[in-house]
Image 1 (cartoon, one colour):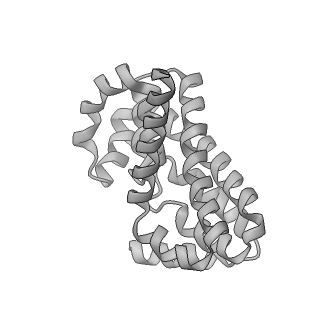
Image 2 (cartoon, rainbow, N blue to C red):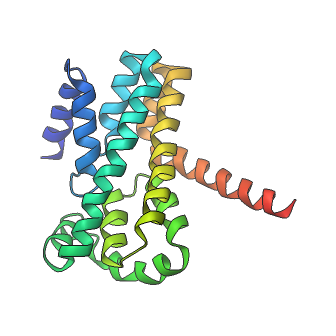
Length: 192
């Protein structure tokens, strides 16, 4: 089934209304859809490299807005819909363990997890379930999703097709290195 969804998304990436499909996929991926929008973002930037900034911006905005749906699921329907979604992704065990992390590191948790290929729906649903501050959630989501999608789009714009397979196969590595560098930069600034 995932292969069929992947193929369907690749087909939509070449559609004349691809930007709207990207917005829709980015929106639903933030709460329940299993495949990240990168599957569409990557071929769209390769096909139109001069529009990389616009494509990343639409992907980011749609993902953040979709995050509100995930937040609402966690806040209003955690026991029914939220647990069903987390169960479908085998994330139920991780849910309760996140409460102390959200309480202590909320914004940083959302930024770091929102940038990585870890399912963003876990972040959005959990934030809602634990009644995390919506303003902080919005701020962290904009930073996390923006950095993620703009980084991928910028790499593709700068290096083109040769970087595509590297990004597709090593997205987790790329985002992890970026997050470590970002956090290290914050610590250096704090020390100076």
